[in-house]
Length: 407
Ligand code: NIG
Ligand code: FE
Image 1 (cartoon, rainbow, N blue to C red):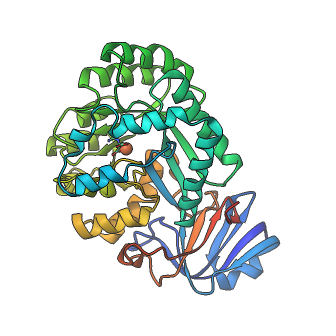
Image 2 (tube, rainbow, N blue to C red):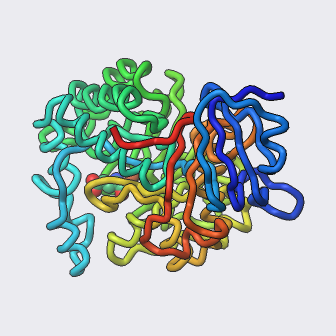
Image 3 (tube, protein in one colour):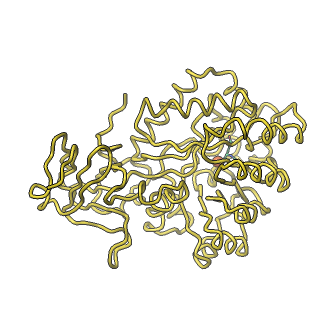
């Protein structure tokens, strides 16, 4: 007998995301799952549960609904104040995103609002976003700073990320994105120096990853190498915003430095795809952002598939290009507009996203020892999740072996 403190019973389909036989999604019909201390300790047919598991705790009756691992969102910017709906309106009428990055607009406008907010205000705003992630079935996010852009305000953003887990059960993997933009009023070289010499050493205990946006209007290849090279030497793992607005060296740099992910990649080349595949760097695609930047190109999916690049799909929640915590919307868009398959986006929002965060086997799948993070969907099969466009079919979210309810 296995002892458990939480079970989910009567899942019409339990989708483990661990490939089994000829099913890449590893489904168990009429499945059940048992957890203890937040980890999965038993998984199998519901008919076997009572004979094999003793329960001292709560149980959730799925009533035939479909159970999937909690989604993993590998690219988000959840710490910011203010909104930029007016810039969204301009862009959909044709104004290029690059032309919105002048002083007082774009990223620097959010930086001004974020600097003006204190820790508690930012925490309150981020917590509302965290609750929206959970309500949409996401249980793990990668979360970037990047709207402080100085020692004090980047530290404030990273502190907010550190306080969130005490308030809500979303797993947060923190990333230092001092390399998001060069703040107005500073020489480029002076800012890069501050990132390399002051911020990176100071944030080692606060962030696991370091990210740089490598392209105009952000950082040059030389600046990107300087920041990421130092980050790597200090023990950070790496991510790169690359080839989002035009072709450039970002994807190569990601591969060269062994980054965990290269993100966006609309303008990456087949040669860069091969380099990413060789390096094992995961392509984190951000369809929601792509569709609010007019004229964006479709990423070279065929080249990724041919080279064997693992692809993840992310929300890219941010106030500029994608103000949405819904990863399922990104999955739908990736299918509808880019021709990704439902299986590709399901794997991209679970297994591949988890791998890009060093959480393979723990998050984005359901198996013995994985986190007991899952969501029940009002669907008959997982392929329906991207098909129900823009409608949240989540009936319940379980995080750490407990049914989540907003605090
Ligand atoms: O991922 N590419 C840069 N960063 C964000 C947008 C940031 C903003 O506009 O505030 C992105 O799309
Ligand atoms: Fe981003």
